[in-house]
Image 1 (cartoon, helix red, strand yellow):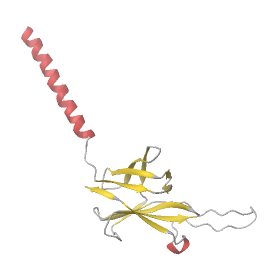
Image 2: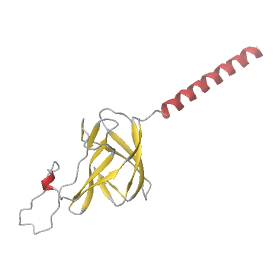
Image 3: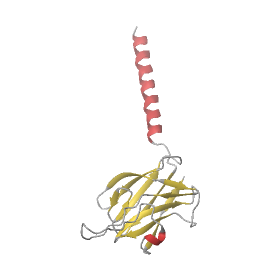
Image 4: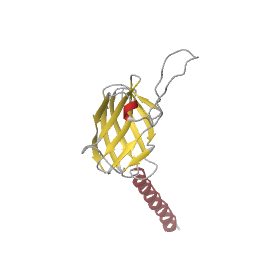
Length: 163
């Protein structure tokens, strides 16, 4: 009788250890792509504004939807940003963020990830103009061409940890 009680306790303990091991493996799943970058100034990325600082990122899956988990910065930001498109072309041979100056504010337009063979595109804000309410104001559509956006483009290197 004591032996059967110990056997039941031992069985429950083994099951609990196996369950915890399985949970630890799931929680520590490998990311498809990860790395770090430094923003020298405040920048908009999709609907998020990131202050200057050092950041880490992780792309959980190399399939749709492409969602980056970004952490860091001066305010210890923890956010998720989804790409609007992913093109199977990479203009440069190294990972980088490409930012554009729209009305004096820096916005991430694309993220090149050559290890994945993809360039991710992100929504950029429309151009804002100050003026009277009776005048027509021209705005830049969210799919603005390069000629509609200021020529001030900046690339920030991304240090990837690969797959």
